Image (tube, rainbow, N blue to C red; front, side, top):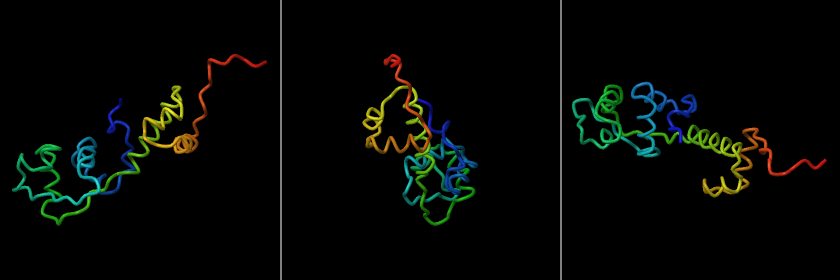
Length: 139
């Protein structure tokens, strides 16, 4: 499977996460979102960045230091979940899987969704049903 960072359109990220991407890169930003998305986080001042800091354990000391230089010592602030960007990637993966002959039923089970939700995603993506090569011509 292709890594999420290779598929995400960073324009879909909230402004704070776009700034984080600029500072520490998309992969580290997404690692931080996976760990703390939707929660309030605190970035320490640069002098207090240590390898055992919980955020350093996720993204590394150097990326945390880079964030600390910009966001250090601010009050706790909420880290966005990046839902719009992550849903766009999920929907693109669903559309691609459907085009390669997975059924809506299989995709619904795989993604813990209803078949109707899958059908809506496919319709929004403009995906047509794959041609069933097993059925011969009717005429």
